Amino acid sequence: MNRKKILVICGTGVATSTVVMQKMKAFLQEKGIDAALEQSKVSDVLNKAEQYDVIVSTTAVPPSLVGKVINAVPLLTGIGKEKVFEEIEMKLKA
Image (cartoon, rainbow, N blue to C red):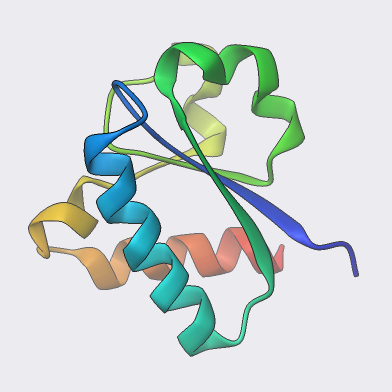
């Protein structure tokens, strides 16, 4: 099985995506999921979206990417984070 690729993005590729990256690493390790995590800013995503299995975002994304993107704001607030992790896990196993 090919290793899944996850892109974590925020507005600048620095602040909130760093927090989400840490939570994603812990989640993947806990679930035993082998996936490559990368971090970027939303303005870079259009050029490389097709390279990733899942895009996890804390900011608005272009409409063309909506189907591939999972809203990661609940990972920052803690409210509804289990649902986000379930959605990520389902997309990675698809």
